[in-house]
Length: 365
Ligand code: CP3
Image (cartoon, rainbow, N blue to C red; front, side):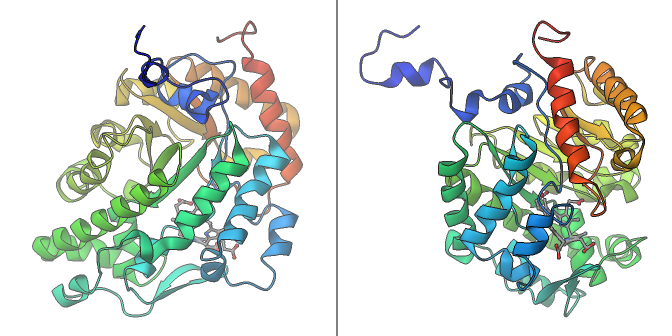
């Protein structure tokens, strides 16, 4: 312990109680024991909540992502309702891309739609680097949220280069990512220029959120599971690595997540995150063997299980927790986002169940 009286002693001793950096969520990300297994849900803010549907009734999605008060309120809604261990910023992966000058919209029921899909080097050049001023509404919202949330950590996020590139090259959501892969295979230089530019945008967006006080970040590579491991390593890994390495000294845990990535988990671990998110297809004990003992895991209940009878759901929660005990740190989550039709009361009950089953002295400590 330091005897320094200049004020550095508190820093040397790490976070104090009541500091989000000492929350169960951040502790689990850092593979430290905590009072219970933390739980939050991807897409916890959104269409499963009547209060969200009400507040969004007359505001377009992208517009709502540019109003700090609205971002703050929507981010807080699931925290108030469910008692989750972390908030996730209400935004979208395409918000920084729009701020970088790409004309796009988020169409209800469809997702992001890009007006002029990327096909040439000139299109890539038009994606400008972003500064805090370009996303000042996110900076303001994060600052407000950190004040409101107190000890509850706020997770910032960004889309990873492959997932962002897929929207930009396809022009919208895609099943097979055909044009994206065709670009990779036919013009690797253009692909790497595009992915490199998107890595810069994602890194800048995450830094804005961390500078404003976010306690952790998640890099979503939702569609990376469409790639073979060899292609992932060749075309995607260096770019995701650049984003995560750029945050190595930022002092907050980094989570990296994708869907259908069972075969990619080892490589995704090498991207450099502290926590690897796992979908429902790969049991967490197997996922832990793949990502290695130096990383925590996050996941991985099938979102469809929220529609199952309670005893079935409870048995599956117990299984996920048991398999998660193989990991050096486990953050309970779904294997992908909350589906819009989900009964929010089931989510609230699920948070209570995870807390109850994992309370210190009642299993894991
Ligand atoms: O609660 C949270 O998790 C925070 C908010 C959040 C949104 N998008 C809000 C949103 C987060 C983390 C995202 C990330 C995001 N956006 C991802 C990665 C996560 C994932 O699910 O894999 C992706 C791939 C996108 C792109 C995107 N934006 C999709 C696929 C959609 C859904 C399309 C639809 O309507 O079915 C969107 C729109 C979107 N983003 C909505 C919300 C709440 C729905 C818009 C609405 O409510 O009208």
